[in-house]
Length: 354
Ligand code: ADP
Ligand code: MG
Image 1 (cartoon, rainbow, N blue to C red):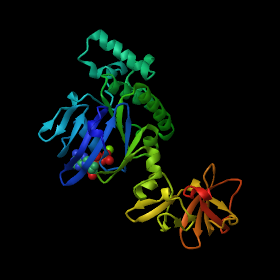
Image 2: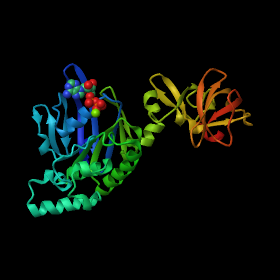
Image 3: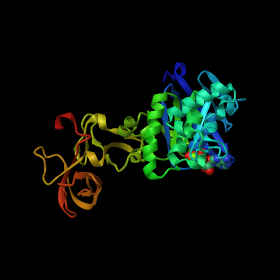
Image 4: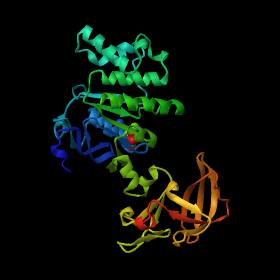
């Protein structure tokens, strides 16, 4: 990649490693964040997300690797710039507002270098940004969860940081509020245009905010790309499953004419996993019918399970050769459990068969 000369890069972490005692929290993590970009780090609890974010913030001293913020090296061999000198904004899961300070004083907390009048005007600007102009005099316990989150964001953004770091920012919100606040934060980040790194264990959080995703597993980044690119070409089955049910169909045949149990597939749709070449079938790309197509494509099987999922039914189909596929069908075309069906995979069909 030519990132090393890219002047647009706001965060440049190279081969960052950190141990906590004998635990290797993160290993060899490399990530670039460009100006105005939001990168979402996604991974299960304990995989090293917070450690990586804290390394960028300077709250953690890294063991190996280096971190630059803009053109300033901030972490590296013999170097550790203090958090308050990094021009980063932090937002945590619990919002961590000062309970004895008003909303306005919370937002103004990082602005001690400013004069009184400038500070007041900046606080006003920030409150307007998060639509809390009329709540500046309130105390944190007088706010809803969503409002607290907006105050935390306003406080982090007030000193105009170069990059905003958000650690599980929606984790403490109840599910209904969560998607609402997520949409607010999404549009706020877009309007401010500040580069940001958000970490979460939740795919919906990551998809809502991330221009790019970095998938973490056991302290390592296993894939970094645009969300749709990761969805289309996941590097392994674990990553493929992040987006929901999927069947990885073994690919046989020649390189120019690959086939799966569901018939011919487009060469471009074949993924070369360490476990062997596969083509993916997802519930919404699997066609289910009662009879074979005229071209004879598709594979026969039996419906083993059926579940109503809102927009239709989700079927588990056992193909006659033993492979199980999952298919979503419209609710006006339900196939009964035990019924015989023919299955095709629309996503991976070669152009001629499409
Ligand atoms: P995540 O945020 O993805 O849940 P963390 O970065 O918090 O993961 O933790 C990564 C690993 O490092 C975990 O095994 C965790 O127990 C360990 N860890 C994190 N912080 C410390 C610490 N201060 N002392 C010891 N172990 C830690
Ligand atoms: Mg964490």
